Amino acid sequence: MYLMSAGSSDFVSAAWRSEAEEAKSEANRNLCCCEYVAEDTRQRSHILGCCCNCVDFDLVCTRLVTCKSIDRRNIDGMLIAFQDRLRLPWRGGAKRISPAAVAPAFIVPLMLGLATLNSKTAIVLMLTLVGFTIWGMQLAKRTATRTNFFLSWLVFSVLYMIIIFEFQVPLLELAPEENYALMFFSCAALYCLYSTKALSPLNLVSAQYGTTPKDELPGIAEASSGEEQAEAQTTLQMDSVLSLDDDEVVDMDSAERAGLMHGQPNICEICRKVTPRRAYHCPVCGTCVKRRDHHSYWLNCCIGERNHVWYIFGLALSEIALLLGANLTLTSICHPFMVVRPLGYPVLLPDDCSEVFEGFELGISFVVACYALLISAYIAFILTRQAYLWWKGSTLHEYKRASNAAGRNRIWSNWRAILK
Image (cartoon, rainbow, N blue to C red):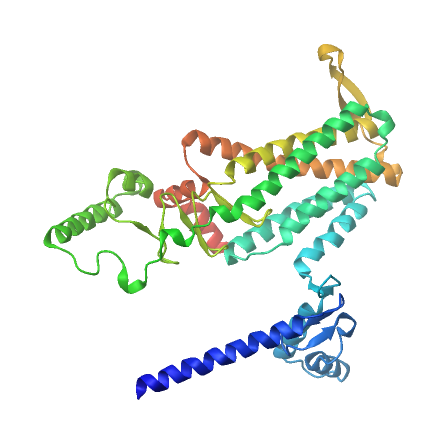
């Protein structure tokens, strides 16, 4: 009787799911480019009605006008409704736009435009940009948030720099070969970074390695006496490793290579997948990544086994393109001087840039060149760190694990805990 009731309940739930899917597909069928299916009501809506039929928005406005306290739940409901109704007309139905992806489209040109006022404003805005970027990156890492904000910032920064260089910088001061070289390195860098983003799903550990439920972890179910002795020996050796002083700590990866984990598959403690060697869990992507180096917030993907080489080539080409573009821009708007003349081709550097803020065209070109130099300094730091890790034969994730195990970051961690 119990089996019959359980089977009937499963049948009813499956029927309900099929009806819901049919209703959803029926609602999505024949949508106009300005129509969409609302998340809360599951009904067809129009993008022009973004402020209509929003009870939370009406309550917030009423309490704001009458000077009454506003409930936090009404504010959250209003923001969720606006986020769902912020759409872009598209074929087959309006597509939702992420506010984090749209914000850099207005922040970047506003920042660059304000920086053209004078040199002091430019310095303040550049320092503010550096501080804001560091704070945003630390916040995203601490909360393990997957966001398109930094990727959108990168895309719009590249777009605006190309527009300013092609339409504001006096190209009559440049040779055509210099412009062609800049376009070549820029396109090559964008292609490598795009390939890095496109190949990132191949880094994820798929189901072919299998999953292991919590109650079926190896070593828990049946074990012979020999396996139990080997397990005890492994436990004693691991305890001896963990009890060493800070100066005698052994890296876990070298411990695995030494055979302390011999005979046991690599199992992720979070997603319970059987993973290959040197695969680690990414808290942002929510899965294990093969030979994980780090999670790039600027590309919104993980850098691992399949896209690490493309990532390095993209950074190197981006560094060349940024330095070349900044040099060509500054030598066009400032008074240049010749450094060397190899093979009859002069190499110029800017000398006097005191008159760049007298006009908007020169000012915006100078600010964009300084912005490019700022980005190139950050990329140079990443490339230097990657070269050091390649020389050590390690990844960034493994290097941080070894540093944390050895207590090298203990002082910085203590100060960071105090300043929180």
